[in-house]
Image (cartoon, rainbow, N blue to C red; front, side, top):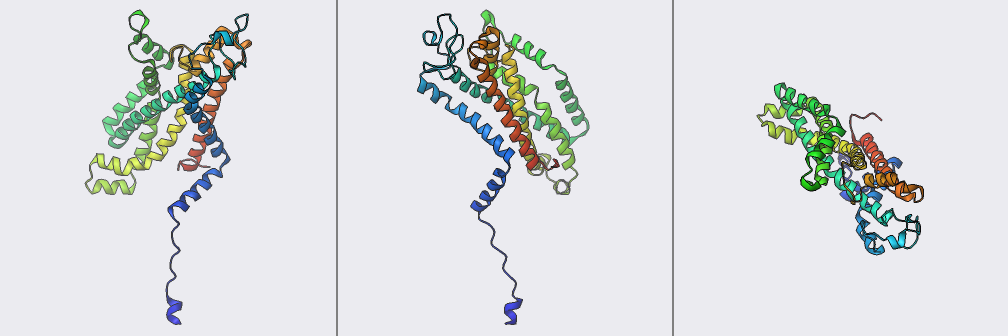
Length: 315
């Protein structure tokens, strides 16, 4: 009897992986803001995915013109009917289909541009923050110089240099826009990473790895990078909506995606230039609402992720 009383109690079994996943998902979806942001971002992603499906169902491509079905006797576009849910623009193109394809353009430019900026900025921040000294001073000055360039003037200059003979372009405009946006957003990641690395360099586990004779590349890869990765990923989500707005702004000003590619910026500019939004408001409302929902969704999602997972954020 005494042996039974003195026998140590067995520890409770650890939860199964599936149960852990359910617990984490339940905690995430208990946050209304996080859920709302995820739903909005999911809707935008779904719109980008189903755009070709919707175009095939209705039989309207993003650049197909149906003037005989969508223009009245005065040559003004209809606001709905004849198989066009949101009507058509001044050229007889389906506004709904073009808006859905605009999601593909915005995400197809914003995600690669933000990812490229993250890779460049993290590399600069890791090298400067870890090695310090003259290397850090040079990279810091290089970052300051990049910040000094005006966004719009530089974009106009790059677009001008990209023009060839007879009005052709030397490089695909999509690649040019991605490069311009990445050029002006990598500095944010560089400063964030540099500050985090400087703080981590004094931690005991990093000093222990250095004292054990680990090479700098190994210390950065094994000790520092895993610890800053969550913060960098969260700020990637923070920067993404800003870059989506930058793409729309460039397209709106005529230095980004060119017509007839269905970019939300070009659609808004076309509606305002032609003034047809006064008789066909969906020409302006549809792309503007789509851009608003996209930015709102990513902003809410990134803000909630930051408040939940960023250790430096005080709730």
